[in-house]
Length: 381
Image 1 (cartoon, rainbow, N blue to C red):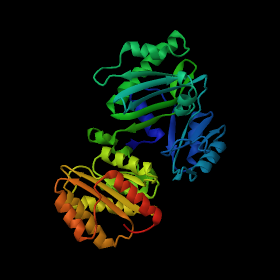
Image 2: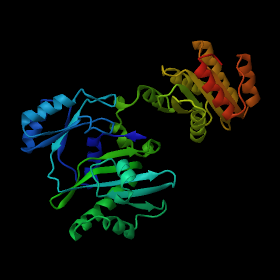
Image 3: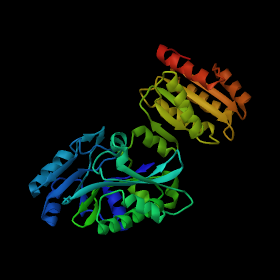
Image 4: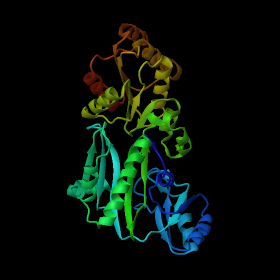
């Protein structure tokens, strides 16, 4: 998934007719002064980083004078938020806030449907609201083959205490936001808080996540992608065309197919292990792809053992085995390695591994149990 910065999200909002505050992004603190002087009133200085909790971390500050704006920018640029260094800030006009709301559209993967959510509890983490006061969130679940229905919009707007004029304005905003969500192939679009300032709704903050599988349809989004905030291993894997997510445990997981990899993660976790990553080599992977995948996982210094689970369909087990053996020859792999091969050219793959003195397991549970034990024992498999 491709995350973009708040200022980029707001630029997209503006292009799609969703009101946002005026502001500019800067990387040099002194520039905050001229932006303040352009507005001639209070500004808010906000860290631009791909992480939540900026306010709690001190990454959002209000400034009442030009000098305060510069001081705030100096304090924020260079600070770390969830291990990410802030390199730029958004300086924008501070809004007069009468009420705060939450408005978002998200893909519900379990239902395979989009969900629009509104709440009067804006400004808070929506997860916290959902846990403590779920009745404060009104949802509309959309059938993938149908447009947003008018009765759904009415259910959403009438869940909030608003005047007729405000309801009309919010209804229009909901329709725009959902169209925007669909047009950019997003998996999440969030406005929190959505501020009622005087008679207008304004997106005071914005979060947008785009499905990177659909980026081929949005060549104009390539400039939005900033790898600076990404995990270095995830960045390297992305450059090699691998689906990789760093999870922080000590058992590397490699498989082919997202479902198989996630199932392997769960099984290792159930056996008491801590998965270090999700890595899907995809379908039809060659020996070189397998080799690149292993190298990525081995680059994580926390990894103490690796479990490779391959179900050979269009992926050939002998190609996978060649990739594994290639890495072993080049890097003298000295950590526990457990392999499960099943499917296309399985016997050939097993023969290649056997020659390298590796014996694949036959069951996922058996493999998970074995790698957890080996990593715990700190010995070679």
